[in-house]
Image (cartoon, rainbow, N blue to C red):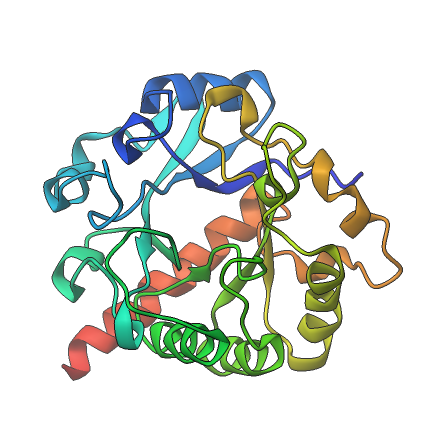
Length: 250
């Protein structure tokens, strides 16, 4: 299995249904040899989730804990018409912005067309870096259309290990569709991220449930944006430069 030493999708107790602190997540990452994690707690529309102040005060968290680089981010909730549950001013303070469709967050999206349209609209947000768990049974999307939009907007699509975790009481993902993402990434030229979606410190960097991806004949290491700490840091530097240029034009 490909050894990936970063994880761009993790949750702390602030998400309301996760069970470790930032400090514990950093220790867990260190123990597993993970060099960089993005702390991406759910946006405020998630039941039990944090107030927007949680994200506004993120600067107090050190950039490194136990030698692990801590990226301050969010997994925002995609709502009606592709809006996110943090506004532009709040998103601008963060180093990494991901978003996905979740239950009980106040959206009125009802079918595949709605889920697809909202996801594509969310990808037009200049602060958005990644769509989380785009392959899921509950909220199916038109992967071809979303793949094209990901390439057009330079947005990462996620391969979510938690979607296939044997610890869960149900499987959220669809293996054939996750494998299709590999082919679409090669076709359209967008990047993928392999992430744990960890809600407890010992889940960080746990990617074994994605072995079917790594063993696929369509898998190529170069497709994975977070294949190394260096690659993520380079991405973040380019992101910072792009957003700085955007601010000059506003």
